[in-house]
Amino acid sequence: MDRATFACSTAFFRDSGTSSPAALGLPGGHVDFIEKVDSFTYSDFFRDYLIPNHPCIFSAKFTEDWGSRRNWVTRDGKPNFEHLLQKFGEAVVPVANCDLKEYNSNPKEQLPFKEYVKYWREYIRNGYRSSRGCLYLKDWHLSRAFPEQDVYTTPVYFSSDWLNEYWDAVAVDDYRFVYMGPKGSWTPFHADVFRSYSWSANICGRKKWLLYPAGQEEFLKDCHGNLPFDVTAPSLRDGRIYPRYGRSQPPLEIVQEAGEIVFVPSGWHHQVYNLEDTISINHNWVNGCNVAVMWCFLQDELAAVQREINQWKDPTDDWHLQCQLIMKSCTGIDYKEFYNFLKVVAENRISVLEKGLDEEASGRNDSKAAISALGMLHAVFDLERAGKVLSSLSANEDFRKLDLSSLSPPPEALLHHLKAAIDTALL
Image (tube, rainbow, N blue to C red; front, top):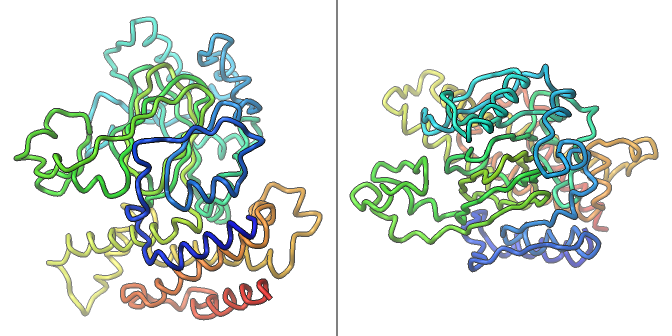
């Protein structure tokens, strides 16, 4: 991060007074196409897309050196099933049925990858029809399962990734996925986990995206406050069911070609269709620009849980702990783990600012190397944003009701260390 971008970003978050992506403006129906790799810098992306929370598309030039683009695709642009079977045939993968609806999503099953490829080939031969329905391989943690494979390199623009930095540190999970599906497979209307950013690269095939800027989803809720499963369903035009639909804006529609990367802003709801047999790589990610959005989302989720079970509230029991447990089962995180998330992010940057990056670390592909590569000012920006959210968390009434004795260091000590590291770095 250069000084101009640091000054711009610091001023924006100081003056905006909001953490809501809905307040950051709309792109006026236009989605920028980034053509050239050598003329588009990290600071360009940070300033023009991350801060204003606007989508963009990166050309296929940004992925042309990836191993998956070379090896997973035939010369005529189709999935290279033979190569994929050779590398991953025995893996077990999550597969969704696009023709079924279960709790406002597609039901999933676990299948051997070789069985899924067999199904896919038969589906193509039968004119894209099957008695089993349209099956879509989704949310496969391929990079975690096969770290030795030459699949892709995360573009520098998306390298400030607190979400995967944390989950890599605790070695439990990640938010890096592979999707593979036939023509006609699709993903229902949704926003990404924690209202995170996402980037999605087509290895082969084409996708159609329907994107709704953050806040527009409020006009798409039915009379009970539920979002639609399919945003193109004719029932949305029934004012008795969807009373505010007429106030919604049309979605931004993107057709993503092979090799291209779509950047989906934080909190934007979307629906996605595979127009051809398609393979894509997707990351969900959070950083200093949208961590406050994540924190607002978690507060909203906890409030929803509290409303749902309020009738069983008893101030003498562990009702508030049960609320945290339910929230974690629904979202994947609770308030104490969110503190640990902020702690890992902060301590990694404090370490880089205080100790620098030694020669041994610079040769590794780890989080501190990535932090160092983005520069000292980026680490300071990250600490400022983490500190802002940490202060809010520490003052939160529901957080303070928890047993915080297990947190090390205590929140106050971490905040003090964080602020001292910022002050020293800016001397």
